[in-house]
Image (cartoon, rainbow, N blue to C red; front, side):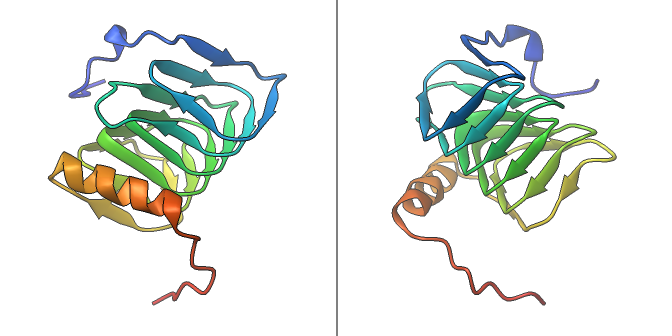
Length: 142
């Protein structure tokens, strides 16, 4: 409602419908709207202006890396937003969230850590290095 990002400008070039399941990585430069299931990573270049939207019906099992991300569904994996992320009321993230600017609505859930970066390059560098290294399965819980 009081979002600092005007969502009316977003154009979604690709729709993954509720009856669709994709296995494998998706590389994008435009807008991607997900109502279905993606088992793989979603990757967009930092300066591309790309937007990934996971709807209430959508689910991603993998890492998301994009300048702008809107989540209202489920994500199992780390999320890297080099510009802006919105976690809507029904968002459920099981993984770490790396962001520069965030809007989180009451009801959104994050089961992981939030990592703020004021520098776009820093968030983007972390995102790229995360693709090259295997995840640490022996994570500590404080």
